[in-house]
Amino acid sequence: MGESWAFESTGQDNYQGDVAVLDYKQGIKSVVSASEESGTEGYEWAYIELKTCSITGTFIADWTPWSLAYTDGSRVDPSSTTYRDFPKPEYPGETTLTSGKCVRGKLVFAVPSDSRPDTVVYAPFGLDIPQEWTVPTTG
Image (tube, rainbow, N blue to C red; front, side):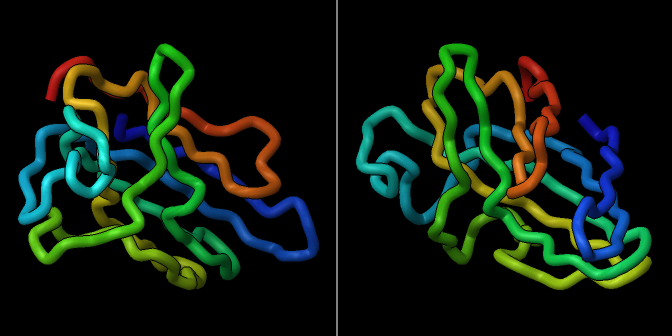
């Protein structure tokens, strides 16, 4: 974690950027339990902290390309709900980045409490091979 991955546009747009997963934490408490939110017993909240920057050009950064991957092949998408006590700052649902600007924040997931994801996956539309960061076994 912490290493950034550089990317650039492959179409008509002309931009370069980088993205990094800075941290992963599991066992976050909230006013609503992850089990209640997901409708499945044995779930808890977790977050990844992200940073996305535009080196040159303009593009939209959002949370939809992110997921958590488990060794059994299952994937968990970010929570589409947010609560007032979720860790701050929150990663925005969608924001436009221009040259030299960055966005940083935490993206929350409802995850099985009895296991940890293997990787954080970044797979935006048009990217042939998703970028992955290994999740530490503790933390």
